Length: 339
Ligand code: UFG
Image 1: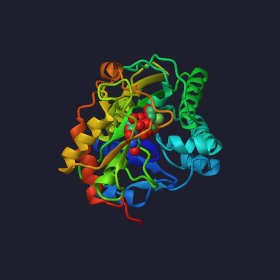
Image 2: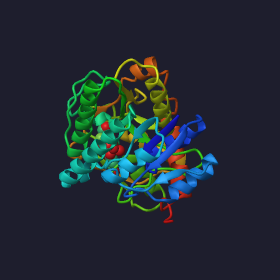
Image 3: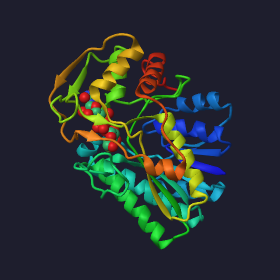
Image 4: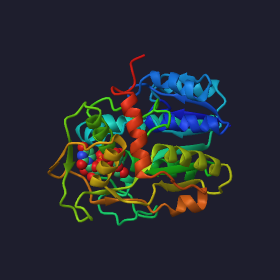
């Protein structure tokens, strides 16, 4: 099968490209490189031993997207491309709506015109909104608390509507919990372009000496140690979930399927800190500060549907995740070099 991976140079996209190739799929990448370094591609080629076909453009460019589908045989699409920073989305709502919605509309339009009807979409647990009970199951109502989250809710709805109009589509909405970790080689990992917003990238930069200390945003939550619980999932497990979802689309009768990709385990911020300290082999500096606006006490998956329907389960522990994140960060203290 020939799979187009949008955002294939990004964090989750790059790990998924490796697993697609390992599974014998033919891969094509489209990435704007707005938030990814071209060096990722040469590293992917080194890992996979294959030259990669890469298109460097923004999906919102309708002519280029249309051209790509006219020129290339494509059997399925995994759509990772999109803006993803929660805080930035609050500052730049129009940019987020425009980027994430338009790129998806252009992509889906080209798919429809070229009869490409298999799509795996990067959704997020953020669609469960602010007051969802844990563990979170796929049947909960969706909502959001910030523009980034709303783009995920809206795109899910758009794709459901496409599948109503054209029931031959097979769409997987994958709701990720908190992806962390890196490829075992230490050559592919998460490379925030700015000061990291997320816990593990921030902690990695503290450990490598780029940041002074971790700020823990609140220890007065109603959780066992007072810090929020999240469902951290190794990016390799997450990538494997995409391979499983893609193969399920070949046989399922449902035009749209929704699957949580999480471990089902809630891990606190302090637990992550301590796991990271074990990986690094020393204590890391931190301070407790006030809560971060918009954070919820607990978010973790009910992962049973993906297990039952995809035969997929996350297997890596928080220690595995921190060890791999640390290998990546210590080998690449400043992230990917410029090309
Ligand atoms: N945290 C800190 N200090 C930091 C960064 C994070 O204490 O410097 C804490 C947060 O308060 C939170 C936990 O670490 O309790 C995890 O925070 P992240 O920012 O790593 O992750 P979130 O759960 O807030 O957000 C993630 C994704 C979003 C997605 C959201 C909901 O980054 O894309 O899950 O699914 F929308």
